[in-house]
Image (cartoon, rainbow, N blue to C red; front, top):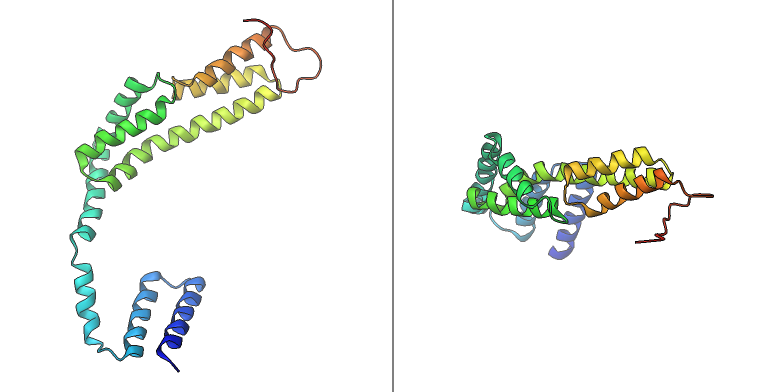
Length: 196
């Protein structure tokens, strides 16, 4: 058999073991040993190659930067930065997203790591963004079903999390108008403005 065919078979076997659930580090190690044996390299080179591959500043720095980010987050600085940026930018349209980006910039300047920033600020702002989206979707569903009180409650929760959400504010106003003067006939969720 040719070396190329043996490498292809070894790779196929590694993929099969991967699908079966074998840990990746073990598959990579077995594949490298098999490739060394197929090409006739000395197995003594494997240890040296592994040491040189792991002797990297980046491999050491990334986990420590993430640890630094976790320590900073544990001290409450990340929450204070996020609260500050939300207070400064939350009133703008899309303020929650802009506050998250600004908080990321400030946190990255402190921690010095993009991965630590994404892990720390993302763990604070992403749940808030997901909550806003969930409340908004529930509000839209209640609006289309003509449940005005429920829709107003949901849209007001969106506004409490993201004060600059103009669309939620518009839906709150529409629901109050429709609550005061209910639409005639079957409600299909479409409101036509008759006057300015």
